[in-house]
Length: 139
Image (cartoon, rainbow, N blue to C red; front, side, top):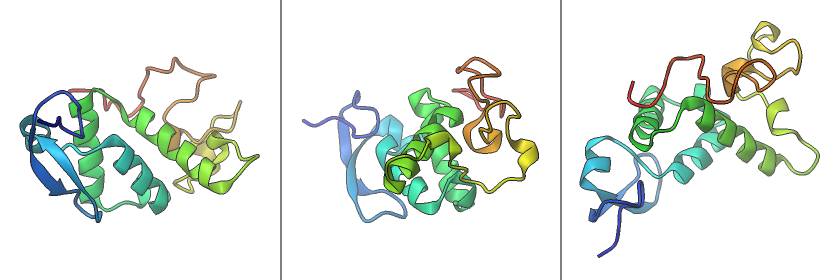
């Protein structure tokens, strides 16, 4: 029997389409109940949207639910989205120079220019594990 495509740990309960995407994946019971979806799919589709701030509320809810289920943070998610956008932009583009929310300058770090709204806190100001939105796993 196959395992869940979301967490990889629990047995597959069945196969269903990811909401808003034309692809079906295997879900385990707990991931299905948690509204959690494959990380790679959420990152890739959010990058195509231009960032989480550009997504519909129901999509943002799916991302938060998935972060909680997988024990990840929105900072991690937004960094991977920025990297995906950078990789699609081509060589020579720094992932952290890609602002996915088009925020005003006051939300950017004065030292490195990282958009704190898109990427959470930058590495030059606080430790990587810090999430300024307070959206820690389990919250």
